[in-house]
Length: 108
Image (cartoon, rainbow, N blue to C red; front, side, top):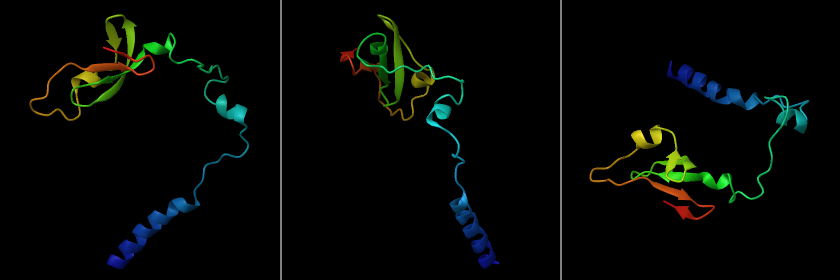
């Protein structure tokens, strides 16, 4: 019985070896326009200039990292879970979240 179970488990392990993605017939243009029918992306030549300089890194006191966007000189927009559920809050830890903008070297 153990041998049969072991053989069954090993066969599940070997199944993916024969699988592969069906990538034949797709050109680079097809891949870029797969979802929306056109590719309207533009290269960002200078990410340290507006409006890209308003995107920063939010780090909570417990070490949680998230993205934040400045929406005014004194307000940053981020996901709620970044501030409400820190991953590993330790006893005695307190303090305000730190907001970093590494491109422009602006820290709040």
